[in-house]
Amino acid sequence: MQFSRFVLCVVAASALLVACSQPAPPAKAAARPDRDPTAAVTTIRAAGAKLESAVEVKPLRDPAVDGLLKQARDLEAQAQPAQALDAVRKSEKIAGPAPDILQFEAELLIQTREWRQAGEIAQKAYDSGPKVGAICARNQQTLVEVRSALGDAAGAAQAQQMVATCRQAAPARY
Image (cartoon, rainbow, N blue to C red; front, side, top):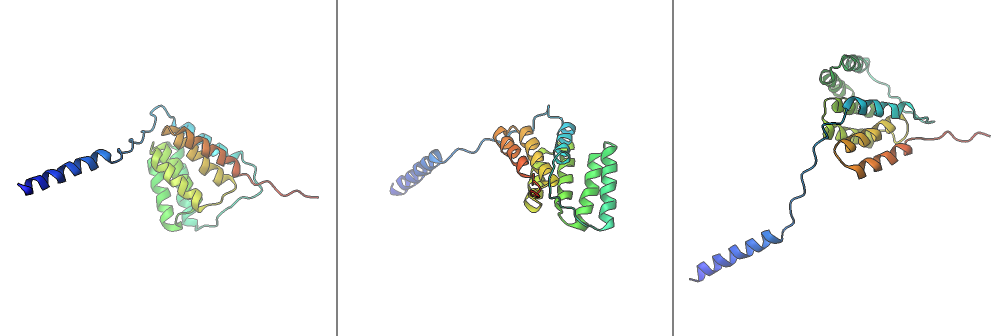
């Protein structure tokens, strides 16, 4: 009799603990199907192109990496982002996770509608890359586009503010 009361108390306590636990977080929203990946990449690249900064970081690299990146750009121009992504990943095996290559990978991931992964790669590129210049602006604009596509308006607004921080004005000359 005491054993059954003990079991009943344990079951009741377990039920109370389950009832008091925090609910599971809501599932993350899927990317909006109406989001145009080509327009997003165009906006990302424009953010880097129109940025006037006194500081730019240009890496020196192995010619084999340059060849793979050229191949990737050619495949992208032929509307083959998945194949271009393969070439970019091969270049990363040689060069390592260079910020500009990671950024290119993020842009290709957007074109293949892998929004969440693109955001992760862009953040990795920003974390390991320069905090000024065109690559910085492209990283942050990628985060704007990804967060917008995933329905995170607050995150997109925050990333939009960060785009402006990528500009480094030239020092005043007397």
